[in-house]
Length: 347
Image 1: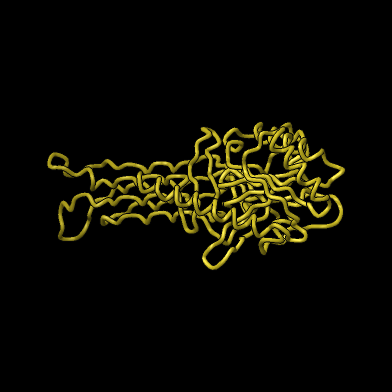
Image 2 (image 1 turned 180 degrees about the vertical axis):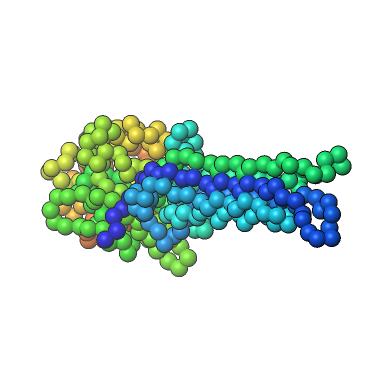
């Protein structure tokens, strides 16, 4: 099985431009042929290109240096050197390239086939024919090609999903995404947590679907590095909606009210922007408590936490209540898509 890697740091170097040529035409019966040195070729640039068939950055974790081809030098008879081939690095859709030295975003590829430059190839040198003029008929001047960009690049994969699942380990997030999509994260009847994110496409009906992301469980103190820390929370930054999944029947985790508060604290510590995203509450495993207990819990959430967002009660294992949740998510996603389209038209 291919290991899921969502970050990689490596060195990129664009190709050097080819040097210009100093040459003079020398042929029998052509006296004073004059300069005929050609230009060099441009150095190859380095690009990243989004590929939907790739879902990990593992190829860049262990191969730490990538270099584009140099341009060839110019030649006599006004022959231009060949340009160096560009280096195309295939990356998963949703990858961001950062310049480590300046902490600047170099590229952000969000669609299949989208290509962006991360290192510019060197400019070609000029041959002595370029310096010919009315007062300098036999120039002995030419220029060398410039060096290509060279930098340390950090690739960061942020999954593209409409909805993200957030919760403590064993809250039932993996079971939920299995029950509503074709994703197959591991589930079992003993305590454990997902170790890397999973994506699932939830199809409501023909031409109506959304993408759901399941990330590893967050635990108390994750912002300080406990457990897996907040390593995978970045995968929720592109989502339109966060589902806060709470296990209403667990005796090992804090009570549901405390669990909701702890999740909000860890989320806010990680990012105010992520904390401000729309969040719905999903009370899972309701088949293990009575209807009266469930009603009392929902009332407490509304009153004690002043929770105004939608609350859904369901059993992911029995697929009870999942249909209503999916249809509500689909409506929310479609509204967001319409608003986004209007903003793009106004721009």
